[in-house]
Structures are given as C-alpha cells and as structure tokens.
Length: 461
Image (cartoon, rainbow, N blue to C red):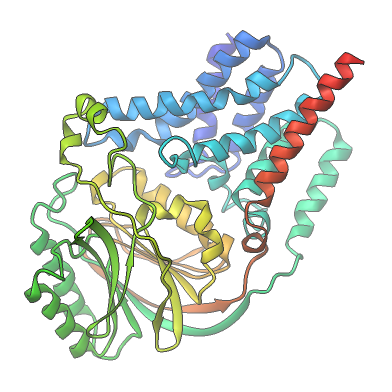
C-alpha cells in the first residue's frame, strides 16, 4: 500500500512544475515521501525513494522523448531516480535525526541531479517551482540550493514553535539588503520568426528559417525604433563566416534599421561546430560560443552505446564548447547571453551581473510540449535570482520579457511569427546569492556529515 501511496506523492509533487505550476504541491509531495520513509526499514525505504523519484521524473521529462522515442526518456528517468535513494540510505526508522538528515540530503539530491552524469540534467528540481510562492525572494538571497533546503525543512517540521520561527525567518528575508541598483532602460525587440517544421526536422531548410527571421524583422521594426534586436538560437544555421550572402544580408539589415542585431547562429571552426550568439553593428563586433553543451543533444558522451539505443543518435554532430564568458556592449549598456541549455547551469549565476540578461533558445525540437512552459519558468527563476530583467527569445515560443521580480510582462503566442518590443530596466550590483555562490550546498554537505557522525557517536556511547 505504501508503494502506491509514495508513487501518488511523487506524482503530486510533479504538479508543481509547469504547465500546471501548483507550487504548493511540492510541499505535499515531499511531506508524503518523508512520512512514508520514516515508517520503514532500509530495504523498503530504498524502493520507496526510487519510486518517488520516478513518479516525479517520468511526467515532467516526458517531452525529452517526444521525437526520439520512449527509450531515451525512460533511460534518463530510471537512471536519475537512483539519486533519490540517498535519504533512504541515511535515515533510520523513527529516528530524531531524520528531521535534519532529510532536508540536508535533499539539497544533495538536487546537487547530484544537476552535476552527474555528463554534467547532469537539473531540469526537474523542485527548487525551480517556487517563483510564484509567497517566499520567492529566497532565490535572490540563497538561490536554488537554499530554496531546496527551505522546502525540505518545512515538510519535516512538527513543532508549532519551529514552524513559527521558520515563517518569521522567511518573512524577514525580504528585508535583507543587497547591492542591486536600478539604472536607465533600454528598448529591445525580440523576434520570433518560427520554423518550417516542428521536431528534429525544424531546420531541414536552414535558409528558410533565416529568411523567416529576416523578413519578420524587416516588416515589424522601423529604423532607429529600438536600441537592440535579438534573434533566437538557431535563427541562422547557415554559417555566416562561410556564406558571405547571409552575413551581408544581416549587415545590410542592421545598417538599414540603424540598430545592432544579436543573432543565434551555428558556425563551424577548425575544432568543430559552435553554437554562437553573434552581434552585428552592422559588421560582426562580438561573438559568444555556448560553453555548457547539451549531452546527447549537442554531443554524445557514449556515442557507440547511444547509437545502439536510438537510431537518432547518428544524427547528432558533436559541438565544440566555448571557453570564454563574453559581455556584450551596445552603446554603453552591457548584457550577456545564455544559450538554451545553459539556463539550468547554476554555476553561471554569479556571471549574470550585467545590465540585463538575454536568453536565446530554440524550442522547435520539442514541439508543443510542456518543455516550452518549463523553460520559460526557469528563466523567471533566473530573473529573480540575479535581480535582472530578462529578454527571453525563442524560435517558436514562448518569447517573453521578464522583469527583475520574475514576472512575465509581455509575451508572444506559441508557434506564431511575431515581434515583441519593450523597454527593459537595467540594473547594476549583485544579489546576495551571487555573492555567496555555492555556500549553501557546501554548508549543507558539511552539516549532513556532522549529523551522521553525531548520530553514530551517540549510538556508540
């Protein structure tokens, strides 16, 4: 009976993710898992935790197999579910230390989800679901790891006094100052040109995808109407360094509109393919190469194994990762760009300290699935975390402007070509989480080890 119950609790927790976005379900799901864990011995706890992990991962990551079949999706979920076993191994039935071990080990679960294997896949972390909760300011103070610790701590509290103390702490977090200061606005145009086909064939005609963005920009933006135009990832998959006609058309467009254009492009160097953000003013002035590549999407860690599992693996060309962080500068206003998958890399948090943040993505590969809503939600979390306005632009949607509080202030319809124009407020300075970095994870790991040592010492006395 408890096995079915914990599967229900995991499914309930998954409703905290988009497209549902019931943030409070994260608490009900985790609380149910914790309660069931405390009632069982080691063997049962391991199986219970594995089922809980599966019941979160399977529904939230189903979109990963939408065009490549169910096998890769199932392998991903069944492998990642092993990480959820950690608290089962460390807890003891009805032991007082469980109230400390569970939240500390949950922070470690989310750390492992985002780092292992092959740089991890930290997409389905419950800490990403709280941007509409009453305490979303936790992101700005102690980040995603801190949010994971808060959620898991709340569900283990049984004493009303402790609950009131934690509530007071969370309420006071809003009043902790940081060094973020508001600056002058910049007017930006986001161009969602659309693609020919959704799915893996989205760019079967790359020149047509390019022309969609070129034409959409030409017809919707007047000369000098904005300070910056941004195209999404994969808008220009015809190498601008090898195809002069494509490069010249972008240069002419930038010159005619008297406006810089940041394009998402794929180029090929002597080292291999590069996924890049290229700034035209009107000539190419700055280039950023994506550093955090998508395993099994932009490179294959175990190519022979992957090709034996999925026939689509042979269609994956390995990209070469960039090495440098680049700050773009347009008329004295500075910004950096995260390209698609880089959005879930927590290590980039400390870099997002320019005047505003750009996120360029291509969602066409995943069609009309929850991936679009989930990725936009992660962008909203990054906005709160960095205290920055975000220009989020996609080939197919959901292209949006996000303010520094994580609220979507303007967006385009999915799969429809369009242009969104809005002023973005700029900011300078750092949020507190950008100052402390990985401290929450390090401290949590240290406290977890100390708690386990203390429990063992008490048992030996």
